[in-house]
Length: 118
Image 1 (spheres, rainbow, N blue to C red):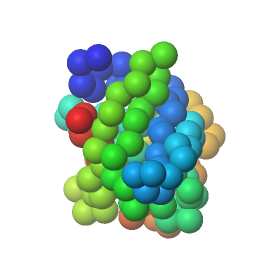
Image 2: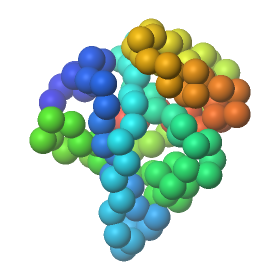
Image 3: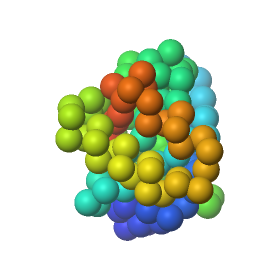
Image 4: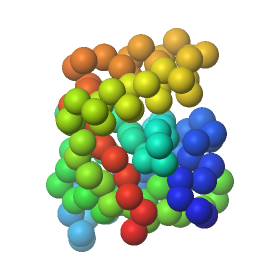
């Protein structure tokens, strides 16, 4: 898949994380947004979300969509610009969902991460 490819339009993806290199894999369905060619995700549960804790401990993950596996590296991006770009992306892409307000709360903004293909 060309990066970011279908991530701009697909509603949900699965992120596969591990607490450590030898730990078992864990998959969670999440939302991903694209702004200026950069892909952002954020934890609905804030810092207590399992996938977020695992991705912070081991920043190499895999996105799964439409039967494809895409290895990614996570860059923690709680800076003002990244948070604003991700928030705008969530508002734009998921405007038709009542759940969007949960993803743009100040309480979860610091869990914004940018994904880079590996």
